Length: 237
Ligand code: HEM
Image (cartoon, rainbow, N blue to C red; front, side):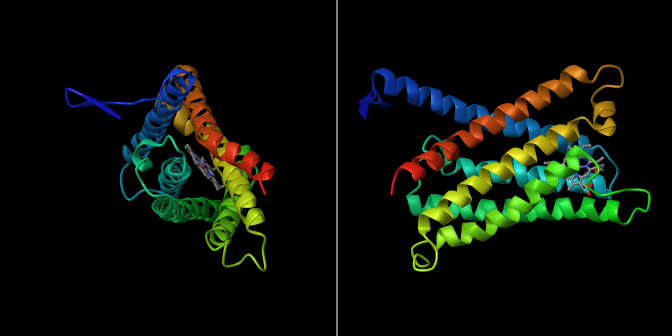
C-alpha cells in the first residue's frame, strides 16, 4: 500500500485492479439489495396492527432468516465481502457458523408457523402452491445443510469416517440450493394478492417485477462465490 497525503492507495494494476473493483461493487450492490428486499417486507408487515398474525410472522422470520442472515452467512466467506475482509479465516468461519445457525433457526420457525397455520385450517391444503413447494425445498435443504455444516466444521476430526471433501462439497451444494429455493419462494410471495394490493391497488406489476428482478440479482451475486469454490473443490484433491 502507498500513502499519499494520508490517503492509502493500492498497488493493484491492470485487469486484477478492474476485476477487484467489479467484485467489490457487486458485493456492495448485494448489501443494498438485501436492505431493499428485507426492508420492503418489514414495512409490508409492520404496518399491520400487533399482535401479528401467523402470515405476517412467517414473512418476518423467513425474510430475516433467509434473505438477511443466510445471505450474510454466505457472503462472509467471499474474499470480496467488505465487512469480513479483515477477518482471519478461523473468524470468518465462526461468523459464517453463527449467522447460518441464527438464519436457519428463524427460517425454520417462520416456515413452521405458516405450515401449522395451514395444517390447522380445515379448508386449506399444505403444499398446493409453488410458493409453498419452493419453501419446503429450502426448509429440507436448510436442515440438511445445518447437519453437514457440522460435519464440514469437524471435517478434519471426522476424516476417518467421512471424506472431508465430500462434507464440504455437499455443504456448499446444499447451501446454494437453500438460497435459490428460498428466493424463488419469496418471488412467489411477492405475487400474493395481499402483497400486490399493498404495493398498488391499480397497477402493482412494475413494482412487483422490480422486486423479483432485485431478488434474482441478489441470488446470482450471492451464489457466484460458492459456485466457484464448488467447481474448484471438484478439480483439487
Ligand atoms: C423467503 C420468504 C418466504 C418463505 C420461506 C415462506 C414460506 C412459506 C411456507 C413454508 C408456507 C406454507 C406452505 C404450505 O404449507 O403449503 C407459506 C405460505 C404462505 N405464504 Fe409464505 N414464505 C415467504 C414469504 C412470503 C411473503 C413475502 C408473502 C407475502 C404475502 C407470503 C405469503 C404467504 C401466504 C399467503 C401463504 C399461504 C398460501 C400458500 O401456501 O401459498 N410468504 N409460506
